[in-house]
Length: 340
Length: 299
Image (cartoon, rainbow over all chains, first blue to last red):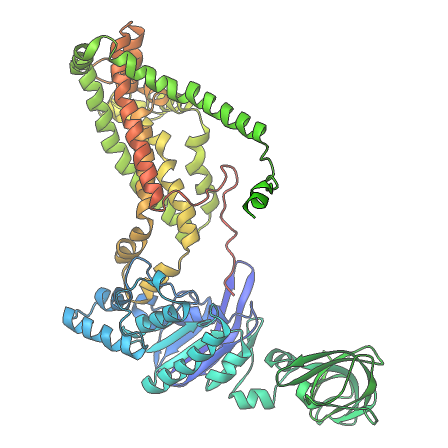
């Protein structure tokens, strides 16, 4: 089912959580709403679910205006960050709940069969008689997903689905959720503040800041062509170097970077740690090493330029570099934005 | 080896000085015995001081039986109503946002901080013949004061906060996720309440009901003002005890008091049993500072 948000606005007391957001999610698409806390992403998700109501604008499910349809009748599956499993019901009863309370009457045997199917889908066969307190966090989240899927929702909505889990479990569940999505083809919208999660999982990423969409596109598009300094910073570790643009070229202290289409004047150059290179002889930005952090895959060097800017970059594990050493940093790749 | 180990002295914990420890425990035990245990034992002794027969005959006295009957009827009316009120109030305060939410929380707590006798007197002024509603009720020949309705109303006022206070901290801690999940799965409001909310608050609810019941049955001050103390008609058990005592019927007074004491002991046992089930363990908000955080916007 295609979802369309049309100039949606939401204000809490005096806080403008969502400001004029328009968005389209194609049928069968897996879309991530990515943004820092307070960016309005959860509010948007809750409005799509019907758990919050928009102060302005419309939300369409297909051609139907769903703006005022209550959550109970909206036919969405919602997965909560902290699972919200019913603690007094077994895993089976949790999954069956939606079918039992449905206006559509089902045979008991039909419900039981569907619960078994779903348990198999989320790979929890044999745990149906356990209570939520007796299973792990990752298992609980899978039960929550099975429970949401049990009512055959038109749309699946997930609020920070992996936020409360540890890193290894998160990575597994992420891959697994992608597989389930590909298998069921259900339109899915999920909220996260973790860029890696959004980029790993989603067909399309919508980046939000202060209640507005700042950029949307495939992971490739947003990574390769970030539209603003905010997006660049938010998507991952980056170095910021002050520069000045004159005639389409950004000049930093010891480096010149192509800056097509950036207006003349003060600018910021952003470069990822992997896009900087270190050499003991010039040319480049003069810097001195302040610390070296050793990691399994390489060495992270922290250096300070003569103008007092901190730079972080990765070098080969074999490279002999130590604190106090002088040298030069060159930029292999960078993005330039007018200083704002 | 063992000699070395046993001779090694453990450093004392803070405040773990033997003299200090014995002193504190001693004080608590003596005060507890004097203040709490002694009166209970005296009740038992005095009730049976003139033998089992006198005890039984006191309890068989029609006035005493009527007092017991009236107390039970009052509890049967007041406790269920206050239970419904408490659940509704706790639900409203913890699950909805509405203007005046904090005010409602404070209002619910008022009976805790007001002397019951003040409540009784206030009822006199509201429902009495010179009061606001008195003439109206008089016109329709409805007796509120010096009758069962007045007793029930006064009891309900005094015990109004009991159930709500047990539920509010618990329901606050549980948040709205479960109800939202149930609704998003298609459950109606009633279904959500009975299938999801109620099972998760049942022990705290029962705990509140037990405390509420104990207080209704034992309430003296407010009821004594509005009941008029008519023997055999509007005397509840606590009022009856006082009457008997003033009539120099000590054995009768203590016999009746023993009934309330037994109720108290049963209440305590029920309370401990319920606490084992996890009820009443949630920290309560202080009386004056309601622990409701400002409605924060969900980002």
